[in-house]
Amino acid sequence: MYVARLIAITWWFQVKQSTKAGIFVFTAIIEPLIFATLAYYLFKAGKEPGTLLYAALSAGLMGIWSATLFGAGGAINYQRWQGVLEPLIAAPPPYLLVLFPQTLAAATIGVYSLTSTLLWGRIVFGIPLHFVHPGAFLLAVAVTIVALGVLGLVLGSSFILYREANALSNMLEFPVWIVTGAIVPLSLLPGWVHYLSWGLAPTWGYRAIRAGALGGNPWPGIGWALALAAVYLLIGEAVLRVFERRAREKATLSLV
Amino acid sequence: MTSLRIFFVGGLTSYRALFNWLTPWILIPSFLIAPLFQILLFAYIGRTTHLESDRFYVIGNALQYAAVPCLFAMGNTIGGERYQHTLSLVLTTPAGRLPLFIGRSLPVIANGFVVSAFALVTGSALLGVHVPLSAVAPLVLVAAVTAFSCTGLGLCNAALGLRVRETAVTVNVPLSSLPAWMSTIAEGLPLTHGIAGARRLADGEGLSRVGGLVGAELLIGCIYVVAGYVLLRLMEVESRRRGSLEVA
Image 1 (cartoon, each protein chain N blue to C red):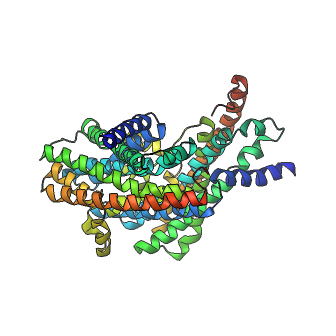
Image 2: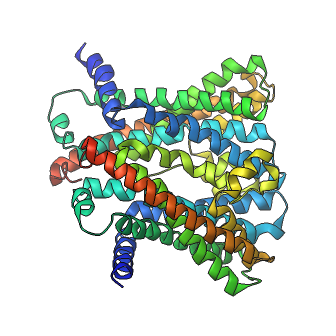
Image 3: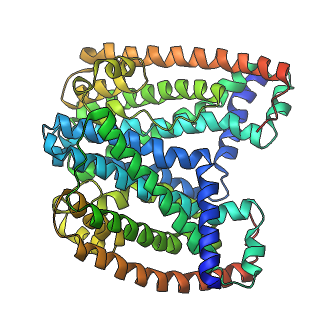
């Protein structure tokens, strides 16, 4: 009960705080709309109008990853800048229970991206929003958010030790879009990339979301995304413990 | 002599402060690796939609990536000084404003140029895009002009304090595929003419045939530099009047 309360309150606090930050509004809403517009014209100019819902959906999925990446990556640095990282780590609850809801909140902000690109596609470009399995679609979105939140935990934990790790945030946006098939079909990529894709929960989450929206079987994707999220949680817990200890030893927690 | 020192040393110091160069390796993922993945992403989207060749996306995105350092860095150069509370100190000095502001743009232009050139070379190598040897020197010129024009817009960005990330619409979608109003706006933005010129150079045309496009890019850059400088001066006067120099 205590753990659930801590996670719920921290998650809600972080969601509220994020929605008030201009950079999150840009990353979660404005940037996905730019990509949705780009994707729309690219697919339209490519004379494949049947894939326009695919394009709008893809832009939203890209936005979910961007929101997770910048939010999860920034979570620890914001705490560092505000001078609360040390007290939070010194507090009785394990730091995992503080960081995870924050990265989960970052992924949750991605729902704005998906909603805004779908509405943008409907209102501006007249793309019909007919979902084949609406229930499975919503479940797939929720599972993908959780999986991304846990992936964000693994990424974000590196920020405890490496203050410059935010440079990785700048680098990881496009590669993950490519490797997870957010907009480009995996079949176009070289064979060795598929092995990387299969190890990433967003790949399966995106696959399930598309199956829910455009048709297909969403359940294997949902199952794999959940399984990988569980594995990430174990990795994140171990990595966070090691990085936290090393940061204490090197006395770098409060260094901005 | 003092103006030259302000221009070169002041510009370089401001640039180094901008990126907080405790560890320069952080620039590698941001400016050298990220553009490559952007090129790959759009090249694969191009293959999915059967819209344009890999060359189209390599050249477009390589030149476009100059916009990221040029717009961001130029804008944040001024914003960073305000945040660090050095802006009011700098502006109370009798230093000439032309070397002060324009000097800060020179390293940014060099940064944008290096990023574009690196992305062009490595992107072409990765995707097997062939560029004629005769086009290399003109492409270097176009990349430099494009970085200059983007920095001009960055100066306006700095003056207005806006946070414009990128102007991507003409980079990956042919102008002819955009609505008329969007194409018209694109004509007045940096990159559009530079990228069009670079694409024709890579297709084997000579510099003399695309001189008009390069000239248009240069002219647009000059207009933005002048507009940016005027805006910066206006902003300085207005900030003094309102006492808002220190407002972060």
